[in-house]
Length: 300
Image (cartoon, rainbow, N blue to C red; front, side):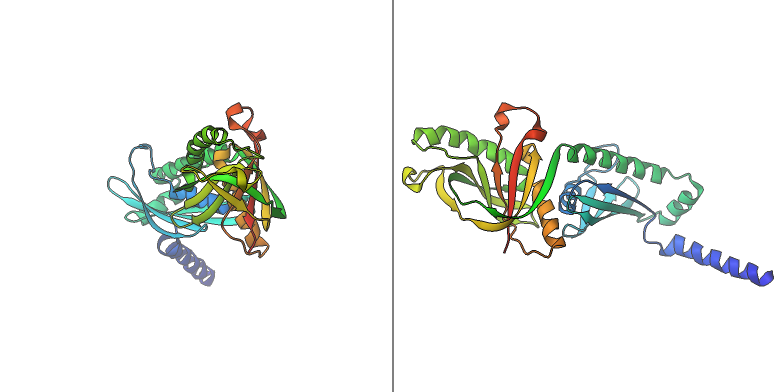
């Protein structure tokens, strides 16, 4: 009996040492999100504040692994803690999110309070994660992405305006260009033939900035004269991965991330230069989940 007691005490002490001094996080939560890991990565990077006061920009970025991990420091009045976000792809549009938290000053005290179930630290953390997840659910419910698989980008001749912007600014830049194009295309006797398109020419995934054309298909080049606002361009027919997107067009780039995940899962090399075709006119309103776009990611 004495020997068994010594063994049990040794195990208990070993577990206690691990829990208090070795365990990676003071506390950890996991949940699933209905979007691709790349989308979540940028959502977390955009966080500026943590806590009740949203105006208090108390988050500092420490480290990242593209589309997989974000590590942040959150500063409070008398302490600070680390948020360690990890994203694991389950499918093209489902991601498991695991978030660990560790205090930089009060880690052992927090861990003891977790054991006794009397931790204000954990309550605040859980409440913030619930708010983040609820906001994320509302967002992901506002659009749908269906992966079609391998396809072909159609050949398109188009007039367009060239723009540089953050990816998050894509929709506002489209609206600005649209007003100019709608006025100048009829004025120059150019006949629109087909649905509006976007061709991304460059996407810097680290800064999340893009360079792209936004414009309208035309019949041929002969009817287009050199213009200060728009230029004539061509998209050649090209093998690509295709997704069908439904929702507000400001979020159509969410299909980019789903296609990137699909490419990884199927060992397909792609170019991060999406091509989009929009089939509805947002000015006519209606149910946004009925707005349709086809998204293509060129295969190398």
